[in-house]
Image (tube, rainbow, N blue to C red; front, side, top):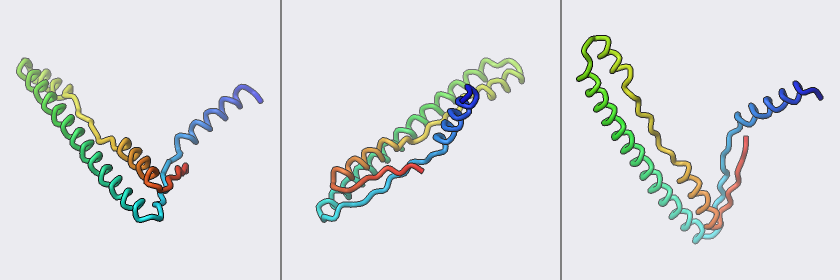
Length: 123
């Protein structure tokens, strides 16, 4: 096998790994107590999601406020139309999103502790 063949195989393998999706198959326990436990897990997950959404919104709002403050300061110093246009072009964007993966991972862990079965499926 030549060096080029090995490189091609490694690149192809890396590309294939990048196209995989992961999902989880959740099977609840048979007992009423286990299902009640899972209901509590779901409530905790929803609270976690809500906290994450609130955090992201708060960070986005603070970023937008700072971005506006920076823009207004730049515009106040601008002494020409071109410089005002530059201020608008330089206004930073605020890209904050909710990262609820931690909430989902904790839910799966709780689900398993309640007696449910969590199976990771790679497609």
